[in-house]
Length: 195
Image (cartoon, rainbow, N blue to C red; front, side):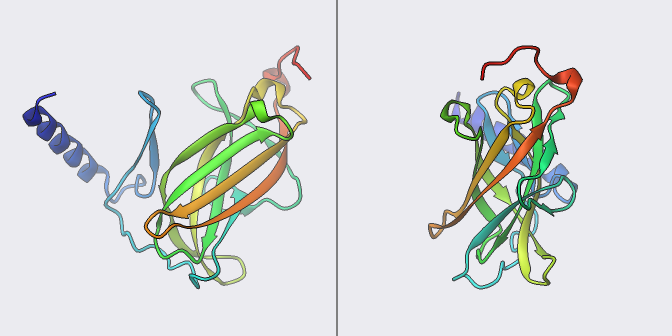
């Protein structure tokens, strides 16, 4: 690609980004299917919430698409069939103590005890400031579609969610692990699955 063509392409992308800033795309991370690259939509207020004391870093996994709901114990969560045929659960999380709203997220799902079932989902995400249920300042990311390995065979299985969020500017990070039991609609279950 010539440098002039590259500059024109960057200009087109910048104009496209400018058209979506201020809409619901703010803070979203869009998967680009060609190459599975994750692109954050920039241009929103980068300050977000302060996240509290920088010495007390934490991330707390939850669920929910439009609001954070805690994952307490090992709840049963229904896998959602996407319009492209895949299945996911909505993952949301709260973070505390980070000095930035741009974080590197490393989220894995897996059938508990099955190392061959790990599905990694990594990308830079933009969180926004909120006040948690206890009245403490936090940052939140809502509605990440976490994909599950062989979802048609996942009904009744214990699913492990692992997350690490990192501030790449200073290397600070926090992690959390939660479990849930997968519920798959009967019509979407496979007739034969390996144990």
